[in-house]
Every structure is written in C-alpha cells, then in structure tokens.
Image 1 (tube, rainbow, N blue to C red):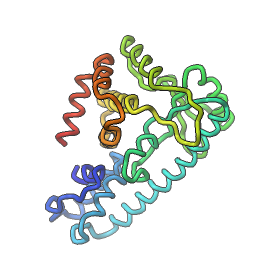
Image 2 (cartoon, rainbow, N blue to C red; image 1 turned 45 degrees about the vertical axis):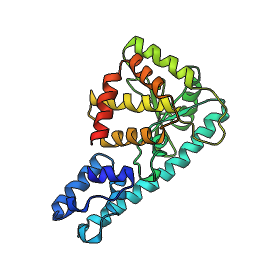
Image 3 (cartoon, one colour; image 1 turned 90 degrees about the vertical axis):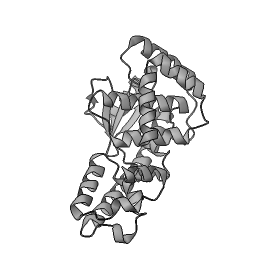
Length: 265
C-alpha cells in the first residue's frame, strides 16, 4: 500500500517499512502488484528506494521487463485508439473513450497505468454504424450481457457500449441520461481522444467501482484511477452540482464511503 500511495503521488516511500524484507516478502509484493494491475504504479515508487533496500536475485529484471511490456502496450494502444477514433470520426460518429487511456491521462506518467480493453461509448443512433465498422475489421463480433459489442482492432479488444454508465434503478438511469445530454455534445473530433466531461468522468469512475464492489470485488487500480481523477479534475466542475447528481442517482452514501477510504488510506 505504501508503494501504491507513493506511486500515485510521486512521493518517495518511507524507508523504514522496507528494511529487513526478505526475498520472499518482495516476491509477495510483486505478485500482489501484478494481480491488482498496479505493477507500473508501484514500480514508480519502487525506483525511489535506495539500492540497499531493493531485493536481489531475478526480481528486479522481471519487474523491469513487466513495466517495459506495460509501456510498450500502452504506446501501441494509444496509436490504435487514435486510428480508431479518427476512422469513426470520418464516418460522422462521435465516440467517447471510457476508463483505460482516458483515465491514464490523470497520472504523472500515463504509460505506467496498466490498460486492458478499449472501451468506447456512442450515442444510441450511432451504434448501428459503429457495429458495421466493427464487422469490417472482425467478422466474429461478440455480444455481452450488458448489450455491448466487442471486436478486435489492431490486436486490441474494443468494446462498444450502449450505456455510458450502467445503473439498474429506472429513475436513477433516467436522471443519468439527463446529465449525459447536458454534458455531452457531438462536436467534431479534432485529433484529440474524446473523454467524458469532468463531472461525468467522476460519476463514471465511482459507479464503476461501486458495481465491482457489489460483484467481483474492487481492484486497487480502480481506486487509484478515482483518486487521480479527483485530484486532477479539481476546480473543473461544480462541486455542489456533483453532490446534487450523486443524490439524484442514489449514490451519495457510496461516494461518502469511497471518499473517506481514499482520504484515510
């Protein structure tokens, strides 16, 4: 946790916590970092420890190799996303990038944030054309329970989402649609990767963590994403409006728990 905290803050870890660690202790730390997909984030803090506290053996070369693979994959994904967005934009479509590279921009070193699939949301009236585009690149499209469609583009899994944020309560889902219409405009794409507006970004990240908390479990990377987004987006949205949105969506208590955890830990 010290490596995670310092990795997202750019700080040097407290050296006293790492004195006397055995090779097996370090192997456990590395295994947990990989399992939680925060290997790059932890490595950023790991490099700020003096050589005398670093483990011997093969761990350091393996960690370096893993981080290099993360950076290489992220660079390739960045190129793929730019090509994908440009191609969809040329068709008159207006995708939004969710999570992944969209959130990586909040980190001091975006390439160290481990990414998975490419998640795109499009307005309902643009989905059919987006699916036609997907079918041109991958004839074996996959449908998922949340009504999203996935396909392979430049070696990466791309998911086309019909819903920007999934909420099961009808009233909350209706209010959410109102916020999406308010903060989303189909402006022409001008070479940049389109991401959600600040208020929508925070709602998206917090609800995503909540759904995992009620399902498969929370990952540390998701908490890091929300922490970095909250820090980098401060002053770019109306805090009172964010609180009002949380109340209308029925997630105020969840946000209070989430924020309290991040402040404390």
